[in-house]
Image (cartoon, rainbow, N blue to C red):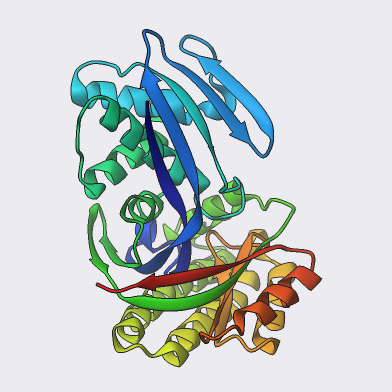
Amino acid sequence: MVRRRAPGRLCLLGEHCDWAGGASLVVPMDQGVEVEAEPSEALSVVAVLEGEELTWREGEPPGRLFLVPAVVAELAERWGTPPRASIRMGGDLRPGRGFSSSAAAAVALVRAFAALYDRHPAPDEVADIAWQAEHVRAGVNCGRLDPLACAHALPLFLAFDGDAFSFEPLPARLDLAVGAFRRPRDTHAILAALGRHQRGEVPLRDFEAVRRVGAVRGAIEGFGVQARRGREALLEGDLPALGRAMNTCQDLYEEELMDTLPELRAPGLVRAVRALRAAGALGAKFSGAGGDGSVLGLFRPGGEVRDGVVALDALGLETQSVEVWCSV
């Protein structure tokens, strides 16, 4: 039997820049998805998601476990033979919170199958397999940011230009207060609205819609600019500068996106950001797709992050502190 694990991710800066173009800054979480696999004549899966056990065997409708046959199909095309194994999936990364649990699951599955078959794909290849499986084969509207972040499991600066991308590991010493709203946001609606306007798919005579196109394009471009500033801040060890970049992204979100797109209106997010800043956060912003999904605040090392966790807990969010400590 082999066991492989992939962490979730937090997007410090640069949301949506993987599919729209630009730059992003991501860090790994402690929580992750774990996959155990052992050779078997037939493919089967047992997954435990928030206490609920799900099962699937090859030939049955996969339901919520659709990622497994998608990964298997992608590996079969690349390897020339479909992998077979008895799989058990679990971990402590809760789905639907905006921390990329699906990409972490896909990455962990790829690594577990690779270990069984004595293959050693590099992180870039693992991320590409996971993305092809989720986006192309399963039809999920996702970019490359999440699988790259989960596969590398390091603080990364990512730059995207069409299908091309580059990445750079970065040093980081960060204390983050993280919160997730208990009611799931409609991620599909958020991504659909952003994508439609970013591509300019609106009637040209609808001047209000044209204004929304400009707001979306301007906001996402601004997210990428701030990610580049965040990169410089991490290289220089300048936490206040990183916090200012985070605050600027949140301001862009509120001033450009919330005012123009109903799908991105998020009063709970605004309250959480204000609470984090009042608790001493150097910077606080949405993380992930947007909406009332997840929020994070950056604090100085030394225990102040606890105040942020308490502030989010008082608002009823699921909370945790995340410590990122990496030298490269």
